Length: 428
Ligand code: PLP
Image (cartoon, rainbow, N blue to C red; front, side):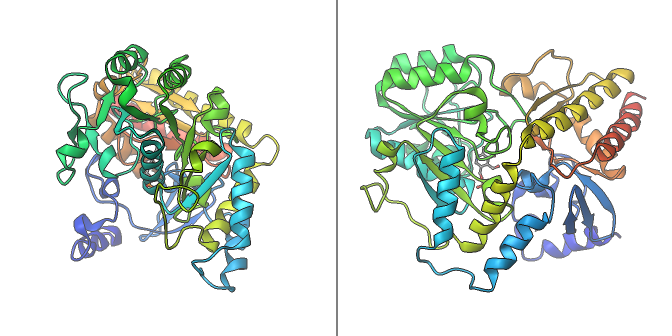
């Protein structure tokens, strides 16, 4: 038995399912999760001393690669002064200034401890600001696990939302309207019926939790217009895309400025951080300035701020995102060429440093229903084939992949060659 296998058995004694977040359990691809003990640059090392080229990057934060010296040094430098005070610190100002300088739609920003907290707080703020209860989200988008967001569409478009998890009250879910990603007509219809009751639209500007689905041209712009027309708050959930698809997030990349933005992952440099922010007029409704309550014992933690700040500073290096994007494209183009060579129906998507892999003969995949038509079984076999080759991809057909600055051209070429061998076996 491998050490990962025996650790997974041991983990199940006192951790539900042996994991602290469900996708880690490999349920989507089968098999036993790998237990890691070290990460360096583009590589992960497991408890059995196997080395992997990593395209998960801790689910997004590790855009500089693992254990980047600038980030590690920044954390070490503040650590000896204490781990947190629950009181204001100077480094929080540096972080807020930097985020507001980088993100186009950001006048004020509040730090929290996770992406879930960021979206939950932004939605409360949108509801408090507009004094409306309904919210709009899109099928296949994930915004963390707060109650209002664990909701799926009812049977008809404007029927009441249904909880997608036991424990979410139906009376809360009914305020969430779930629509089809990339379908503006669907949004227009919903607003024609209930627009004046809708507090906010929350959307992943590039959907990264149903594989990787870019917005079709005009989709985000259309959401902006509809929100302006109905006095609805537009929230771009940039937990995944923020600082990853460009220095200015998806909002800078697509030129669509939201009223509120939620962030996570990269902003914490690998430590537990989230943030939400946006227009001053709206953000001034947050406590202690305004009546909408929001707080956090550990928010703005000095270690987390130091890690995040060091990471954001490194991203400001000239040409960082251009290089990251070019590398990601090299990988996706290489995968496509190999799939074509071996006759495996397959396509990819890519925006900046994030990408998607689809086992399908559909020409394009633009929404959840089309993602569901892809061959998840084949993805599972591809995933395990790649794992055996020493390539660590996200253990689910419904997650985006992430490139880092640390991946070398040799790493990418080795990955493409490995993919060729795995495609050949899939085709056989
Ligand atoms: N929003 C998006 C777009 C995400 O991808 C995620 C997590 O993957 C979240 C929110 C929730 O963030 P967290 O897992 O830090 O709570």
